[in-house]
Structure formats: structure tokens, C-alpha cells
Length: 224
Image (cartoon, rainbow, N blue to C red; front, side, top):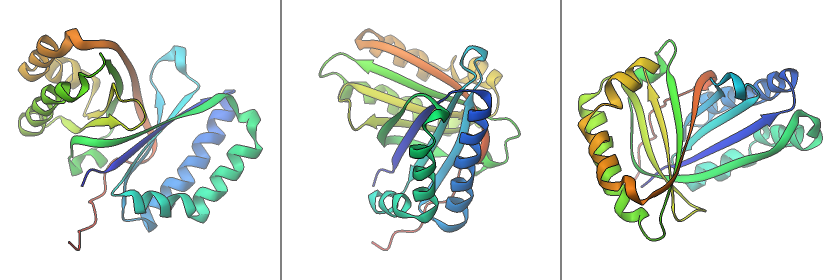
């Protein structure tokens, strides 16, 4: 069963507001790590781009929809929602929420031990009717990364549930250098771009670093 990955992009109104947003999300992350086995990732991240220094991204992964529902109903999240809806001055713009499900993914336990992991959140738009075929290229990239790139700590190819022509990715590397010197130069990445690059209509990156939360938790065992 694919997991559900939700990425929230919060635009803070100021540096002080950014700190308050991070603190509020951190509290939820502590709760999820301790009390919610099915919340397998809850990472609070910020942009590494100095021109985008007020953005906060929350990257959340849930084992299934029941876990999402329980998480949203928890006291910790209800308190967060209350804070965000009453203190609207914290935000410079409405929060963007991207709801996706995993097509292909892996996460190494070592991701939690990385001292300064480098995270990529990418959005790729495709021509009408071509997304299904594009997943073939991403399947090969995911397999190559998992089998032959120990410094690629996590890799998720995500099917956007609201935009039928959009694929999103969440990628975690041991360092920025590893991304560009190893992963980006791999045959799988090169072949993917060569074969499917012409059906892409847009590509957007956000480069991030973790400031709170966790990148990995083993998924609970299924009773099925």
C-alpha cells in the first residue's frame, strides 16, 4: 500500500514569525515521533536559498489514510490549527499544501543520523496524458539510487493527488556535494532526462535543510 506524503509550504511574515512557526511544528513532530507509529516521517525544514529565507516546509509521511485522520484529530494538531488560524499575522501568504502518494520510495535508517542532510523537494509538470509513462523513468532512478548510492539516504517519487499531470519528489542526500557529484551524474538520471525530458513542461526545485523533527521511522507491521 502506498504511503501518503503531505508537504506544507508556509510563508512566514518575518523572522520572528518563522521561529514561531517552526516551534509550533516542532511540538507536533515531538508528539508524532513519540505517540504515532504510523507517522513515519515528520521533518520541519527551511529553505537554503538566502532569497527565500522566510519559507518553512513541513514534510510528513503517513502509513495510510487512517493514520492521517487520527493525526489531524489529535490534540497536538488541533492546537496547531488553532494557533495558525488565530495568529494570521504569522503568515505572509496562504499556506500551500501538496497531498501525494508514493509511487516508488525508500528511506535508509541512516537518514536520522546524518549530521546535515541535504533535501530536495522537486515539482515536475508533464504534458497531458504523459505522467503515467514518465513514472517508468523514475522507477529506474529510484532503483539505481537505492542499490548503488549509499549517500542517497531517502528517495520518494510522488503522485500528486490533485494535479493529474504533476509528479513531486522528496530526496535526501548525505550532502549537497553528493547530490551533484554522484546522483545527478548517474546513468539512470541521465537516461531519465534523455527519454522523458521532452514531455516535461515545468521543473521547480526547493533546496532544504532540517531544523526539527525526524526523517525516518520504521513503518508499523501490517496485520494482513
